[in-house]
Length: 106
Image (cartoon, rainbow, N blue to C red; front, side):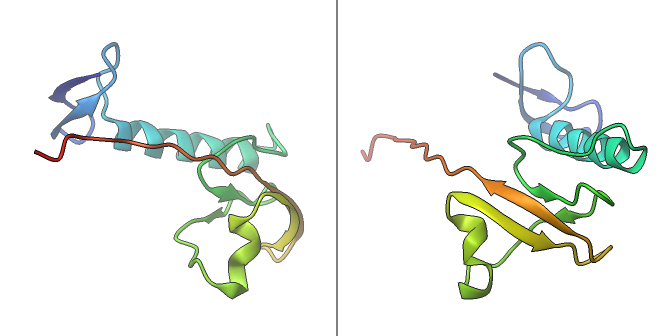
């Protein structure tokens, strides 16, 4: 990882060594590609994504509140979900992982 100017947003940010885009721009580019593949019918499912995509219309579920109404999206397992955009029901498989970071306190 290195700090450099992102060729998309032109901001000084952390980015992978061999890539000229920051992580935020790479993520946005990936999301757009997934949505396009679903819209074009090139794919009918996603795997290990950071957000939930409707496999019918490509709608992205993000900023889901962590409350009792959406608890199933924060517990490992397989659940049915109705898309708010196209109203089709699809399966969501939730994978839960933990990662940790540390730093010196002094």
